[in-house]
Image (cartoon, rainbow, N blue to C red; front, side, top):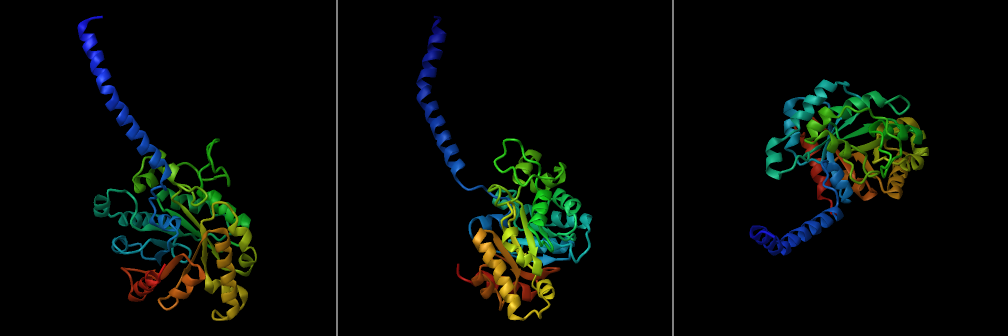
Length: 322
């Protein structure tokens, strides 16, 4: 064997223990990384997955100024109300871009949103939601609130509209996804490749690594009657209570004790199934709602920043001991 090859071989042998050490450290790191919880891009999902409460607001104001103000707030989520406000997807997209805080991205070294953007859609459970779901998700929202869900089948259809059809070897194939493929704008907004976006864009907690939430509004007598079956639908992330519509459906004043009894029935179903339960509450009402078991807590409506009453409600909720 030529001398220079012998020296080269000897050098490789001398480096072998070091190389094996690097490989061992790398494998240890990979194994440890595989055992930790997913790094969520949605602070709402991150809070719920950790068993914490999440606080947020609703808004009709899709101005850049409102978006910038909310992006720098101490909120976990904001939902754009397109049930009682216009279904204006162009304005919604501009609002989402306004929530993107480049300074926060640079500071934290992560593309994760600082405030999770959600939308409440106009179609009721008895209507077909697929077209509106597709529009909102393809823009980049990280979760949807579905009004007037009354049956398990309506909830299943809502979840299906949010999910892509799963691969044959996918661990969570059901409910079968109906969402069409067009992730370009959403992937750009999330700061991901299209492949990574598709992996993240699934409903939590059905997919433990998902960053989308599917919240069903419970706001009628029939919904309360079917609440256990609705809660059992795979892919339902939680409920959001609509007390005013619920009291109207029950034919009772909002302050009637039977309305509160119906609300407690909904909370009990959430606790039994281990899903989130949301409601809007004032500063005075926050401690009671948290004691009931609510984990998604809205402080009210924001516009041009946080009104004093909304800020007080969120602060009161955060002050409740865990």
